[in-house]
Length: 109
Image (cartoon, rainbow, N blue to C red; front, side, top):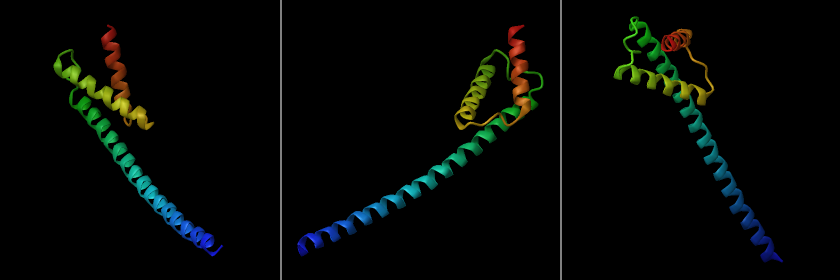
């Protein structure tokens, strides 16, 4: 009887420590994920601002022309839009969506 009780107590201590250790590791992992999500959101906002600044500098539309630079520029805008969609964020700059609307209108004419 005493052996069973000793075994039960020892097993309870081991399982209690294992549970505590796993909870501690899970908490650390959650903190790391939250930190990375913040970093990705900051990177997304910076990327959107960079696209908006490129559009302001490029008033003539040379970046958005149908050459290699235009294709690269469009690819960058699509990647940033995909990131925004994944993160659940709207475009940070209204000029960005306005410029996209103008470029779509130019493509149809």
